Image 1: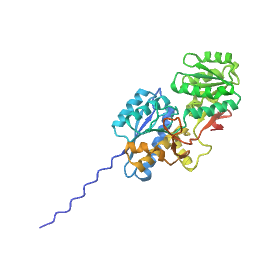
Image 2: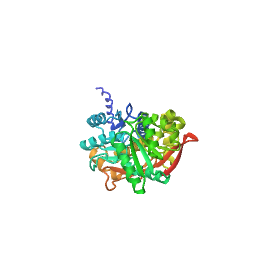
Image 3: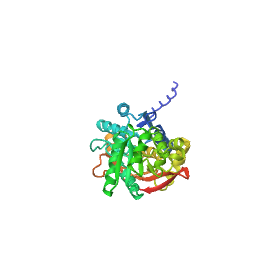
Image 4: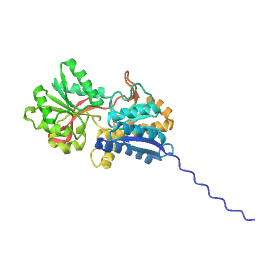
Length: 371
């Protein structure tokens, strides 16, 4: 009797991927340049997790990307979809108003969300265990910016602002910081006034600084051009605390007019070995210098991958582990804490600078203050 040959072993099914939902503004009216940098950071970190050892505990790490287009309603729908697809956590978003919608829905669904790049203090209406954030809260960064203005001698400050929860919150922070030192803040409606109207108002007010609290490129670009071209406003400081001048699109559209505009940037004085390596990889991926937003994206996935390794894909266990995070990020060690009065878990020491493009060489940045 002939013994039949042994049957070949059945191939083992591939392990199910661990999924992270990535929310990014990739189309207008979203700030697509920021979205592209954020996505580059998210994708680079995910790719390196795969290359370093086949994912997380043998399971591939998969980003499921959805475009928010700076639309809170669209972003909320994306959160519902991603939750139904079984993502372990959410990452990303640049626009604060959209991130607030994402955080609110994530909290309601019990889905961990690590906010990559939005700074609005009140991402949810009340304290939540489900949401953490990489960048510093707006109240901290904009206070540092207000101190920069005061130290530079600016006691009459005007803001050209569009209606928005984010711009309103920033204006409030500035006023609360400046007023005790005798400085004033005049609000000009950038939606109702033309750039020429803004110039007339500035000339009448006698402000020494104008902060552009608007979308980019419109109305920020025509507004900056109008102010720079008005002889009555020679010597007026233009500022953009939200970071518009960080991106190459600002320099490309404004040229020399876009230099000397201080903004907030979340980078240290010097990158360490990890940050230097990641900067080179991001530069190759983007074809240009990476912004701080790209580093924020990379650090977001690095944190979430570490949580997944340590705690698995259970959503409740992941959310409970925010205070246990201890990760080396591109811009320093990342740990989360819950300062009094805050509603989300917060990286305890994110770097912060006030920076501008050097008028002598607009492709080069000058650090004006560290916070």
